[in-house]
Image (tube, rainbow over all chains, first blue to last red; front, side):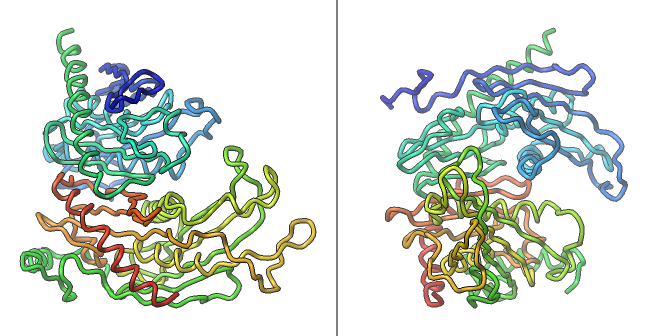
Length: 232
Length: 271
C-alpha cells in the first residue's frame, strides 16, 4: 500500500465525500452526494398515483428510477435525453435500491426517483445510488436499510478503491477495471454488481472486502447527513 | 409456447427439484446445455454463425465498413454491437422501440468482447486519424428458450474467428464481391465466454431456460476470458432486484474458470 495516488490517497482510501439532505424543496425527499469531483443529486416524489394503469401492482407500490448525466457534466457535451447507457444505469440503480424499500402499504402507487449528475468524474452511478438512498429515507419511504455504493477499481495489477476519471483513463498492463457495487448497509447482501475490465476471479473476495470497508464509511456519512436534517 | 406467467405449482416443483440438485430438463444446477455451432450461415456477411444452446438459437453476423474514427480513439477501429429481439423468436418479444432486454443484451456483449481484447482494434486503422474499419456485430435470436446472452456471445466469438476483412477499392470503397484473404486481427489466445446464473430462493443454478428466467428472483452474468495465461473476468451485471450474498458471489467466481475450460473444449471442435 506504499503507492500514493495523484491526489495523495492510499490505494484503499475513498475520495472526500459529502452528503446533504433536503436540497430540492419541492421533492418529498432529496439529497446531494459528492464523491471527490463527482456530484449527484436525487429527488423522490411519491408514493403517488401510477399511470399508465397497466403498470400498477395491486399488491405493492413500485419504484421507478431515472439516472442521467446533465449535458454539461462531462468534457464532450452529452446530448440531452436518455441514452442506452443511461437507460441501463437507471435500471441497475432501481435494482440496487429495491431490496431496501418496502412499498406494500402503498398498493398501485409509484415512487419516482430521479438522479442527475451535475459534475462527472467517475463513479457517477455509485454517487447517484448513495444520493437516492438518502432521498428515499428523507421522503419517509419505509426502508429496511440504507444502500451504500462504491466502485472498486483495478489499475494494472493493483486493486484500488474509488477511482477518479484520470485513474479510470489509465492504459497499459492489465488496464483499468471498474467494479461498481452496492450493498445493504452492514450486511453481506450486494444489490448492485457490475464490472468492466480485466480482473482475476480469485480477486473477487478481496474486492468485496474493500467494498465493505468503503461502504461502512459511506454509511456513516449518510447517517450524519440524515441526523443533520432531523436536528434542524 | 405459452406466454402465461409461471404458475405457483411450477415454482414449488422447481424448488423441490433444486433441493435435490435437479431441474425440469434433467440437468444439475451447474450444467450448461448442449452447444451446437454452424459456421458461415450467410455468405454476404464477413463472418457469421448459428449457435444453439438447448432450444435457444441465435444467429450472429459480422459486417465491416470503412468509417471515421471516434475523436477519443483516433488510432483504433470501431466496434458496434447491436441486437434485435424480433417477434420471430418468442411470443414475449414485440415490434417497436427496444425494450430493456434489447438494450441490455448488446451492451453486455460489447463489454465482454471489448474488454477481453479479443479484437485488436489498433490494427483496424486504414489511415491514422482519418479512416478506420468499423466492425458491426449483429445478433438475432431465432428461438428464445432462455440465456440469450451466453449463447449470443458464443455466436459472436465463433463468427469473429472466421471473419475476413474485405479488400479496398479506390476511394476507400470496400469490395464486398471478391473473396478476401485477410482475416480480422483477433487474438489467438483470448476470447470471452459468458456465464449466466440465477437465484431461486436459496438455490443457485446456471444457464437458465426461459421458464427458469421467469421464475428466478434475480440473475447475474460474468464474461470471462483467458489473457496472458490468466483467467480474467471482463464484464458482469446483476439483473433483477434481489441481492446476492457474499458467499454466492464468491462461489460463482470460483467455478467460472472450470466452466470456461469446459465450454472452450466443446467449442474448439467446431473451429
